[in-house]
Image (cartoon, rainbow, N blue to C red; front, side, top):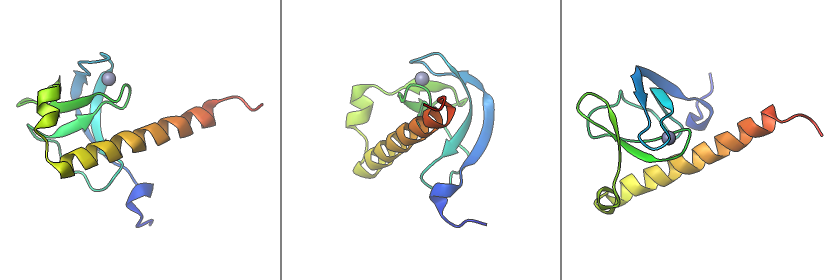
Length: 103
Ligand SMILES: [Zn+2]
């Protein structure tokens, strides 16, 4: 078993929802930067398709964070969001590289 949290991703299956920014279906939550408790109302998330910053509502519906919401976040929350967005960018580039035909 690998103990490096960057090498493992834990997912929680969630009811189908849609990103309010790109409208793609989202039905799972995972963490690329450490252990992930099951999402709860008020938790933050990032759309893996468009990198929009989102928050879970009371029924785990997703809403887009406003600039005012973002301005009210704590530094540790901003750092976690920045790390998540960077990890998703790296993951997307890795997947694109794996899926590209050889040159
Ligand atoms: Zn999206």
